[in-house]
Amino acid sequence: MQSRFGKFGKTKYNALVLSAVLLAGVALAGLTINNPRTWKLGVALYTFNPYSFEGQLDKADSAGLKYVEGFTFSKSIPELQDSAIMKLSPSGIKKLKALVEKKGLKMESIYLVGGKTVNDWKKEFEIAKTFGVKYVTAEPPVNLWDSVDSLAGIYGVKLAIHNHWKGTSAYWHPDSTLAALKNHPNFGVCADLGHMPKSGINPVDALKKLKGHIIAIHLKDIAAYNDPKLVDVVVGTGVIDFPAVFKELEAQQFNGHIIIERDRQEKPSNLPSVIQTVKYYKATLGLK
Image (cartoon, rainbow, N blue to C red; front, side):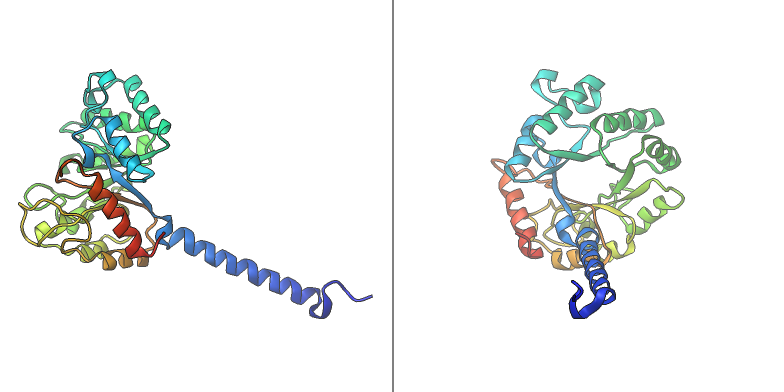
């Protein structure tokens, strides 16, 4: 009787199966490590800051986005007297967290204002812990690097250093951000692309310098280089070369959050511009 493996024989059959498994593994690795389809596209709730926390969530949901980044100086909800999130009790934070879950959204990051003392930062890390975020975005004072790094380790979250422009931020240049990362294992980077050109920095060049440290991207655009007075424009309508940005992130095997953010407050709201950005993002990357 002929073997059920036919003319190939069992050895050759096993070799073919192994090859198929290896090829599938390579394909899976491509999807999970180096593919824009795995990037977590979301929106910074600051984009909708004129609204209460629940209103911000509603806008994010209307844009068809799953991920949101909170901010601790946001007003909360009428039930909590619209108090700033940073002033709420743990029970108040839990009510806001429940709203996020009720709407089917995920808040995996939050922008911390922090402060001038270690205790200020500890209070905000407690807020982050209650929300259950995976990382926090912040600009810690240079003299508190060691303490804030230690707190990030204690609370089990990475701190993604965010940049504003020259004259307003210690992290306006990628070299200064790299200086903060040295000997601080709990620090990473949240690269705000729209702020970089204000200081004459090409975002692609900055991303290359920050390779290996980027946790998240703040996705925004700007109309010109070297003008710190400018306010952002809709992504894809300014001077930033986003196809080159995305290509660099792919080359770095980036696998984090892409957070859309608007600083300019347009009428009646920033929702249309966020929807436009989502469409641009997907079209540029060939996503459906």
